[in-house]
Length: 310
View 1 (tube, rainbow, N blue to C red):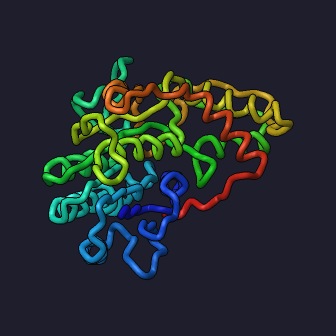
View 2: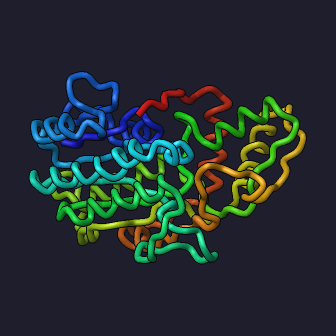
């Protein structure tokens, strides 16, 4: 049995699509009534997981408002640091596999080299610190676990940079977009697919293959390539224009991080080295542009749903 927390967010929706809504699996969100899906209600969460005793716990819920976290530190820590630790302790007790998602924001963004899983972490923001503390709590628990770090997650569900660019390109004649932060846009569907691949390798009886089980721990998960927010936006808007959309936008201008101050500091280098995951899965990731183009088409052709509740 698989329990997915945060099932109404963009990653949760992708996991639901990938896993399938079979009766033996449970998809929980804050709005769930029969079972506790609010990860910050640790008493309710504990009762739910101890009652259900799933084989696999997938935590796709998080406090993801990076700038707001600077003001609401307690809420960010409750969701991103304390709750994953509680899940991990329960997973260890019931011998369940815990899968959790983290972020490139655990790094300070220095240099240009893609970050490896073993590189020292030095988050710049409350959000990044809260996610790092969650990782550390899981690692210290003794539970079987996979932590997938990803960068710039988006999908055709919910709210994200891609959909914001499409909306603004219908409203403004010029967009100013940061051009000195580097990373890789990662579709939630790709994260979900990698999750299932790891599950299939790691869980005998639930589809495990003959290969050796991947080591528990942290894996970087992102498509191939690298880009800036500016070039990402340019691809999105040009793809939209090819479909007859985004006609208001006449110009996209590159700016620096200093020209766009935010409450939380962002890393300039969010490149992730994914060699460890590629070796574990035996597959190479797709180029990042492929999913972006497909998603622009899905959003503009009206095939998406806009449910972004956690």
